[in-house]
Amino acid sequence: MKFILQINENNEIFIERNFSPLVEEGIGILDRGVLYLESYEALYLIYKNRAYLYKGNSQLGFNEALPFLINIDQRCWEKFLTYNFFKDKGFLIKRGYGKNCDFLIYEKGKSKENNIAKYMIKILFEGKSMDIKDFDRILDFSRKMRKGLILALVDSNGDITAYEASKIKL
Image (tube, rainbow, N blue to C red):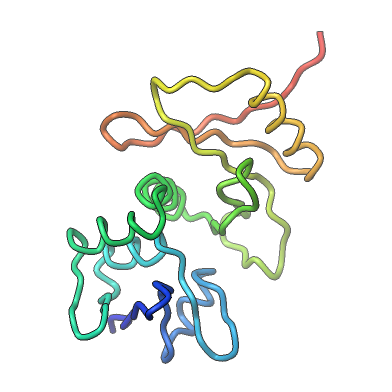
């Protein structure tokens, strides 16, 4: 069974029926009987051939959905690549909070309700520098949130390499 995703006039992506398998996988946010998805979650489902996406009466395949969703969220592509990378490795991955945390990642095989996110993920691009003060601020933020920090490095081919970052005292 494929899921039917729709985009409303506010460019929100949602599904109204038969979404319980997605909720069990930790996909989307349930609000008053409707499951709302992030752009990268919708792209992931389309990419995995698990969903159709409709804007009005028009169906958007992956190649049509990508530029449309990038107009909604400029970081959709990098988020999709990172989301796909960790989902394929069996992790539960959810939207993060603020500009310091792109995603939260939970232990493999456990639901969000049964555990606390162990790591936060920050997406970086290969060849693009980050100010050391910004990096230090993100590390401090992760420690304050009691989470490890994973840097997801996106290379020019769209491949992801994940690094765990931490501070040491000398």
